[in-house]
Length: 238
Image (cartoon, rainbow, N blue to C red):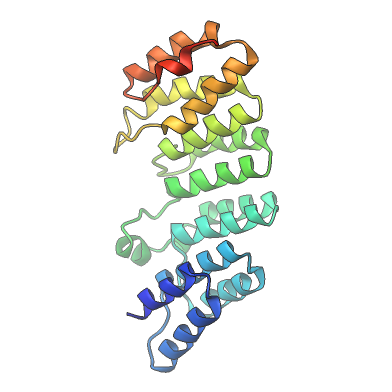
């Protein structure tokens, strides 16, 4: 199908070829849908083609193609990569203020709720960490728990927070969020847990700070009780 062909070109980084397929498809009377626009937008972000990305977003609006949560996630990643965290937040909060953006038709077709989903939450946290703003990550992490019909934070968001805060030296906050995840994720619908790589980063940072002996054993026990992987090596102070 045209969608598969466009995706293949985008994966290979050949956006001109992807656009040729799009033009051919449209000329034959097949309109581009949200999936195709998302594929092209994702390709633009991967290749840092910002001009084309903005043109595609304008075209989506002109054609009346509704944005999905995946569209919002891609736009957040775009602004993050461009170093404009304000624009990334603007994208998220515009979607929260205008639930019609994630239309009922789009929601049913792509099995999404008509609200911001956990992928968007994970992306905005990741944008904060990528742009070296852990304070803003902490704030939006708190705020997203109040978003309407939001089923998060999820394991990816917790992992991004734990790993990112640990890297930036916010070890008390990272530890607190790891402990919170032990309870929150056990009650989540998919019961997916924080990745071992994120937890390892936290324990390494605690060791480097010299507080592993004080904090590590209790934290490790809580994480293990919640079903998360904690290697014995992580708990050794030397």
